[in-house]
Length: 598
Image 1 (tube, rainbow, N blue to C red):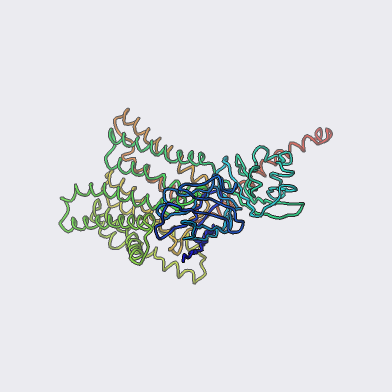
Image 2: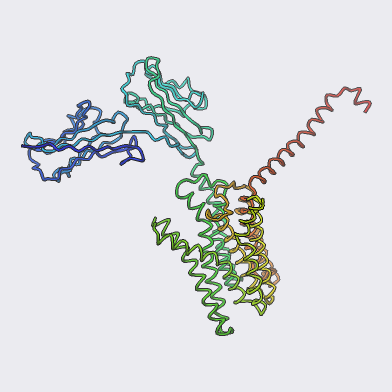
């Protein structure tokens, strides 16, 4: 006695189900036999259970496409070379709405049914918005699984009340279209009989954004309708143009400083400036007004990790160069001071590497768990002490006897003033969050500036230490940006804050113009006079970059106030421009008698 086994499988397009099967793609209807079967006299039939239509047939050692139902010609295929191994699965290409239904696979050996599988295929259309670049083409999907007679069939696509395209009397009616869609909106006319009522829209424009409705009528009655949301985005070439404007000038300045370092500049000056120019496009992208035009992982990485990556990598490069400078002076220090400096450098490098490892493990490796969270907590705790370690390193490496007083007395006082607890308790006495956040940011920036000021005061008037002070001031500013954009921080700034074009233009264009002018001026004066005007270009490059980073941070904190101020200024300008025009019109319309009296 032979028993036919049955297995029911659901293949659904919903994201919450087992398999997502989008329309127009391919799907494999699986059918396997666990026991070996003789290939001789083997027959495999795939049928629609509901309509009994023959989807495909394998017989006499080969596929029999001529016996297929016409709807499955060139769409249904066996894995012929796998049938001898018990794989009787069917691949169905160009999936249509009418393919929805139940399928049965039956395997016969010597005219006896030895195996059977039943599969239910359900096709659904996703309701997610369609995001496409401007200037490209998009297909607005509309499928109906009902069989509708082509006679008296009417199909229309509308955007709000605007008629995008019309199908009636078995043909498209482009003369009925709105003029904005002439030669841009098209039907798949040969697919309408199969229930494919999708619309092909070419040369996508910004004004095409919105909700589109597809309605199908049969005998003047509405039988089917669906909606599609379209979100045009910037053309990829436009984004690439912006990226080139961000990257190319900085790459050029990178090589300019390489040549400057070879010919005239110092090693530390060249290393720091080249590292900044190589990494600063990350900060510019984070501050770009078009950041929301990016999608997926690229947008996430730019918003969350671009400036973090710049901070960590720049810190490693800067501390490596600083350690090289300090190593040359270690012989002049006492044994205790040598040990302290070496230990501090080791801690700083460990801080940076811990942050890098945590980001790589969680974001690229997608690893999670208790150990990873503990490691992340330790990395965050260590990064909190980096600003303190930076100042201690500077004072130990380049400072004088007054450095001990600053490290022991002044630094703890400033650290206490910027403690989160004080500002959290200020909320109990009526201070708003915006006020506390502003005060916290001011205290943090002032602390950094004052510490750098104390550091410079304790130095002998030498060029290299002050240049290092400018570099580490920028690292402090980047650390401040990281702190105020950390979602776990009490005064956290939203990553989705409005980016202002003037700030972005200053960072991408103004910075390059200022620093390139300074470099050219130095080169000319060095050639003519034989001496440099600015002892170290880090005096110009890093303070200007600090100003840019602080401007981005301030624009995020005071987004609403800056927007209101710009709007009021714009209204004032428009009012002032309209006043003279009105006066001239009045003069022209005044009678001649009045003008003569005047």
